[in-house]
Length: 216
Image 1 (cartoon, helix red, strand yellow):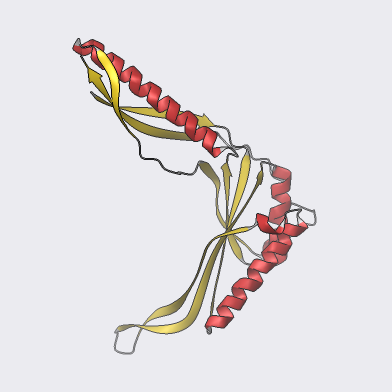
Image 2 (cartoon, rainbow, N blue to C red):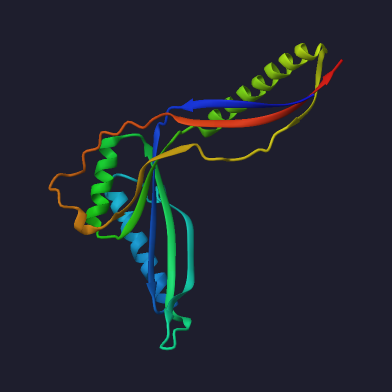
């Protein structure tokens, strides 16, 4: 008998993750690299001023590619022309949930003049504990379903013959704040930070495991 068990869990987030995207296009490859280094360096200074360590800001993606612009020539033919080299860099930083600190960080970003897009995500510190609890619930659910099916079929449930589980590292996070552009001119306040009073909802997660039982 093959049964798929589903484990579901409502996880209370206890960490904030700030995802930031930097990008720009320069005529020369070297200039693109210089611009990336300059912008990420400014971000490091911003976070250092907010009490973070230098290695707290982590790069999760970086690329430099030739960038082409599409256009229509005088005969109406669609063509492309080389515009330069475009770099894209994604960075993240995490810290315990604290709306006051988040407000100060966003205010510092706005005042920095670094043109960046960001996403605010909520996650949990102990991801492995959540995943293990999910897996335990999924196995229990499979056993309960198997017992019901065996009783309904008038057969006796035997030992577990096989367990199929696709191990994954799916992230546990929610994203209540949409992508925004953070620029210097949006920092019009005179206070030391933006006032935030957000309470993140529980993160709903699930996982599945398939178990094959012997029947008698």
